[in-house]
Amino acid sequence: MTTAKVPLPPCSSRIFRNIECGPSPAAETLGFRRLRGINVAGLNRSLRSFVLRGRSKPIKAKENASASLIDDWFKPIMAKEDSDTEDRAAAALSGKNLTQMSNVGNSTNIMWHDCPIQKRDRQQLLQQKGCVIWLTGLSGSGKSTIACALSRSLHSKGKLTYVLDGDNIRHGLNCDLSFRAEDRSENIRRIGEVAKLFADAGVICITSLISPYQKDRDACRALLPKGDFIEVFIDVPLSVCEARDPKGLYKLARAGKIKGFTGIDDPYEPPCSCEIVLQQKGSDCTSPSDMAEIVISYLEENGYLRA
Image 1 (cartoon, rainbow, N blue to C red):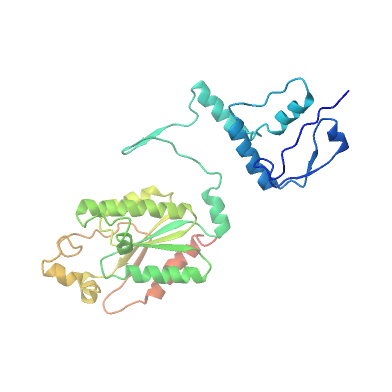
Image 2: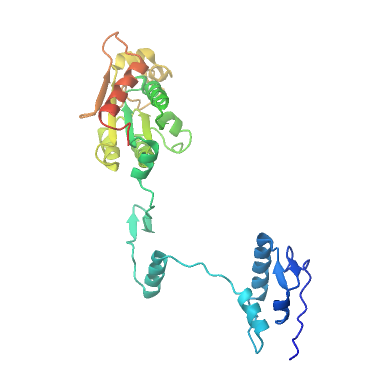
């Protein structure tokens, strides 16, 4: 029987570039030469290009084995789906819904997507417990200074923290909000949601905000699991804060140039049942680092600095 000789495209062709060809007696009987020394990356690109160009006219096996081999060689390899994907695909085809769709606020038809790596896994990696330390107090009470001192001290102990400062957040995320009562509430709500994400990531999140209204702070507390919201009241008298006046805002408020300023013509509602109170009485002034150590002692005693 005479064996048909099938000419092989040159190795420099667009389909078979980066392939070295060599003779093989066994393959000669099928009319092919053995392919060896294949550059996988080049072949992969070539095959993909070939399949895309030839999709409308697939190669069909006829009477001889050569065409069948070609068909098998260029058949697209399909990734095997895992059982979960297969189940979801089957459910979609059957019209079943495995996950409940939700409407939240103005967002409709949304679905919560769970990740296999959970908060406990991240906490184990970081060797700490994610939480929110919410510093609240009048302007000039030292919230930002204490927040930075606390972050620095925890960092020196190998703990991962992040500070969400009220003024800093208004430079970006909340730059569209004013200081009207409704905007101040929205400011706190947004920061509370961001702080929640940091805590879920296993980070010790420190917020530094006046946050004057009790209901707004309570709403942020409700976002987190019990024990993950640590409210710290920086209890410094208004007279002391006004004497400090680091931004000159009290002077402007007294002159009527700023309206709705907390402590002057807008109320500050002290926490009813916060976890920590950092208090200053009279002329006695505790240093920011000493105040930070009080918070760290609380974290250590309640197991936040270990997984």
